[in-house]
Length: 117
Length: 382
Image (tube, rainbow over all chains, first blue to last red; front, side, top):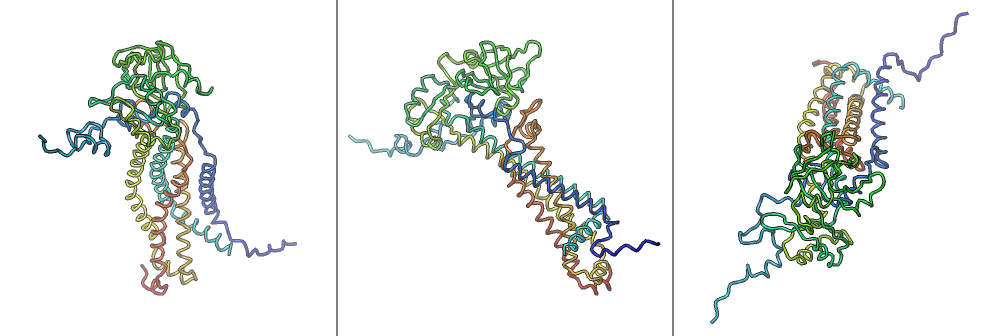
């Protein structure tokens, strides 16, 4: 007795030529999911948490500069490097820029008076 | 409805695979552009966050005696003067400087026995004896005897007996720690002199307010640097570099959008084909949705993959390329263990910078084709 014909499956698509497309979708979905998972995990606990040994050592040696730039370069000491620009607005002023109030009180800018007998 | 959407995704994938070369090239170009853009921004953000975290352990204020010729040593009694000011809780004379060696310049610092005793077991360092030194991983010494010649105000030779752990490279890569007497001799300091003064304050926010009082308490002119200033200098430097890198890639993003528009037009095919699809019952919405789906199938994984590659490049342990390429190190560079706590905003920013012009290009190209009348499309052909 011949086999009865398979019942129609109206809800299914003919996937024979679409299988590679399904693989493509799967790969795309996997990559995006991995990225989202990494981002989520990183936000809460960090994927590559940095070791906590550098900070105590910096405290122990008491320096305020990091070894990001080789020693001897101006960028190694961002704050205390002497600037090549002379910021003084008058050549008779001290090398360090003075604060405003002490400057006004100083004799340097005092209003000259006429000589009194 | 669910099947219809599924079919649309599958059909989009099938159409993409009809042009595998163009699809692959588009994905690769988007992924590489994402990696380059995200690497610059992530590195800038990570360096800023890491330096900020590390500098929190440094001194709140640094007082340096200055003259028109530059810095001058201070006497160790200067610490007592600073401690008279209310709010100053700790004052530590520092002996340190930069000196050349036959290979490269190094930063020399005198060991503080009390401070080193507070280090935990993982980073335990024994204070060096006279003639000995503790060196960072980037300080090269001849193997057999491990002698290091330092040429400061006087030349001395020390033997490297310990190394700082590589995990502390961001602090100690080219650092040499000496016995205080050796350091003074090397830097030309008298027995009671120090290079500058590191201060701790009761409340870090008070540091700025203490500057005028500090300037008054010392009998010589001083330069006072706060931790906030140091942090700001680092943040400004890294932020500027990251911003410039992002600006450089804007033309590349525009070029990618134009290229995408061209490829989409080519992939949609001739006008008659669009007209045929519409005659078969496809709506304009279907045609646009198909193109958007195709763009998403290519663009989203490419951007996600590019972001993950950038993440691995910046945050992976034992990463040294940034020091070599961007920060001036040559033969050796510090291993950068960077903080990755705030990568999410950068990810979103980069994804937005790339996705918005890309999807706009796709939408515009698709709308131009899909909005035409099918009768005209079929009659006029190409």
